Image 1 (cartoon, rainbow, N blue to C red):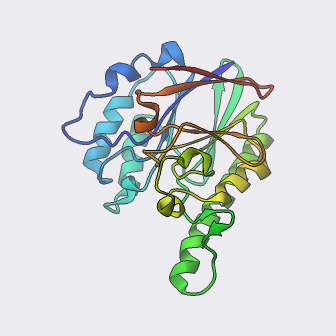
Image 2 (image 1 turned 90 degrees about the vertical axis):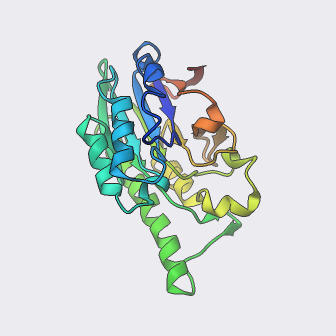
Image 3 (image 1 turned 60 degrees about the vertical axis):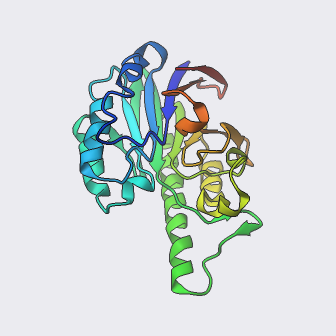
Length: 250
């Protein structure tokens, strides 16, 4: 059984140093890896990213992350990723990482993702260049997620996890105003996960949503935005036979 800790939307910056460090220092007792589902900073500056890096540096478990929309705000996303990578965080965008957890290969495929909406009420890449660009960005993100999950299967991963910031399903958005669903996620991400297969999909972004959801293909989705899980991290137990148990929050 692999124990997966996950949280998103922690929005750290100067003044919040040490806020999560005490909880994160206990993660080794509860989980085998930690996933960060984007919006790690407030305005996407390198200074804020250094605060995040301090919170997760030297943890006893591997850490994988994707960035969120807040992490892009100041056009310093490369610097944000670099600060995290400097302390050993696997920052993913259109790629994946294979982690050896006590002899079990666990693969994490990550992309920020983007919006566009969900089947029957979604944007299409038709018309103005701006609309085409919007949808094509999401499509590229979804395609990269699909390819990364396929590559992780080829690498022999017994467990594969899709990590995004934007949501792949509507289920975990319940509680948010329906008018903003198109800006919270896209069905294209779910299609990618269903096509390639995964044991779990984890995202953040929807602060007023709910934790539990599922893709049309039956893959479990978890919204781990901190305002939703109301803890430093949630823990999920995964086995190579596809079973999952919801562990305790910390």
